[in-house]
Length: 333
Image (cartoon, rainbow, N blue to C red):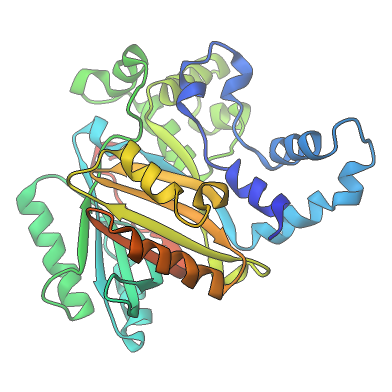
């Protein structure tokens, strides 16, 4: 385990709900490469001027840059649209074709590939799509397209999304969404620019959208405090050597998210292994976590089986996420 790499990835998920409600201007500082390196240097080598050089933080960040990209997620629910995860077991020979074809669909945000340990004990290749849709009819149409694409009649699993944050500042959200009316061009342009480059500076952002810095900063602050944007790492785990990364997903109709977190965190010391947590899917929570080896991963899976969690769980390994370049957000057009 490389604790510096782990800390770098952990700090890429931003903001927390504490940041949303913080009155400190510094709280809105995004996790840029410089900021992440500075904070890690301070925490691991407090008061040591040579710490940066000795720990090799800059070289580690350059290494991580090939496998991890910071990504911006927009709360589609605030704009009247839904998000859903749809997964299919597939054969290896269909994966490349499915990834290539799905990237042409304007409703697919991300395509994920992983090897999944199911509760049957089998390790199977899965392809997963995160999609945007408007209503049930639209969902059924898009699900059928994906099913035809992978050659499966029905998905292996499907999870409905929800708001990115449980709490947010309502006044900030209302200023962005404009009460359900057409959004102002400046706001649309800021969101589009952040989707392209989540770490773009406020001066460069203002220049790109052709607005003043104070206006641009106010829009950005409202996006964050309105709980409308989340930055998180998009990872190709196959490119990170020295540790085994996996995604533990728990889905339960009877447990609260707090109960799911406690149930999963109690398994094989998972709590100390967690990088980031995805909470914005109904009845579902996903943890990105590390293990020392493949055998350590199997040990966690075996413990999961014995826990008898009242719901479904999935352990994904060797995963890769691809962001679609063709995604179209109807509320931004």
